[in-house]
Length: 475
Image (cartoon, rainbow, N blue to C red; front, side):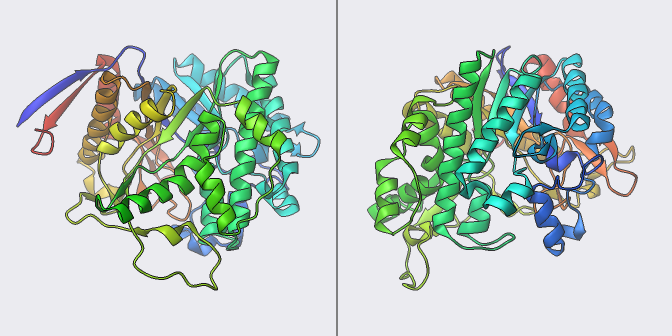
């Protein structure tokens, strides 16, 4: 078996990511500080694997010093997480800061920086305050847009001297797609109108926060973490190409275009109107979006999305759904992560990089999430208690290689961040599939153990080089 070694540029990020709600737990959380995720868990706990949810998570709130030490051991250059909006305030309407939670975050950020790891902070990673969800319908309301800007203002004022890379949202399309478009999550309310309104208000909120940050003159940048799905048509036939274009329009360009180009695709607006989707926006709001595009993007990439032209007629009594224009397509013989049910196709990194280079002004961007979740990972534990996750090492290596190859070809790719730093609770999946460099042992007070991949990751970070074993796929 042959090998290939490639160099990592000295400024290339090699980090890992998590979020507040998936790590902190509820220690210190006060009455009325539930997030949307907390409400979902409380109202629909049976859909979470083995009943695990955000109540304890990984208990970062009490164990952040231990985890920061592990970040250093794993060789992270950067760590991305979120501040929990629902916990940052005790009064969302007036922006009254919860000093206990804010002080915890002061200590946490100080510890990260002291360890030589750069923090990257997202303002909302599904942590919409439950109060705002129940009172205003969440991102359906323009009031929530204004309250988010107030939240950003308070966070920037508190932490701008500790953090210079900010992001408004992580995967801003996800919650409303799962709740209002597909009705797969609590409270199961199918409404394409609401889905599009949430999309627009998150785009508007991002532009307003960018505007605020620049007007205040803070050092650093504001971006967003998006999860565009690299979409491939079943064939080169016109009907399959159209299916892929439409999928891309509704799920990818609905955020990529306004955030980077400052406008919605005309075809998207036309199709929404054609299908009677009702969403409120004004010329002033479109101007704010136009004039306040993001500084950089984080892109979450896990698997390809393959589609084909639909083969069945749409039920006329069913409200419009983008699936009007496509059906999923499963490529025969594809590589699979059977635990997660996701195709493994590292080429998505390169293809997305080239698209950003060619279509989105080669904006600075980095891979904000990429990773491999495995069920029953304890089966790979050796006699010393270390999980031998060679499959994760191979996954990271192949995807990192594609990022470096894209950079050599002119892509403005700034780095690679693994999901996740530690095993953590995910929506519904809970701890079923494990993603971390660090194991969380649920049976022993959430003890931490570095996996084999953590030592490998540190080696890549320190040597600034990646060595791949090339099988037939790479030759």
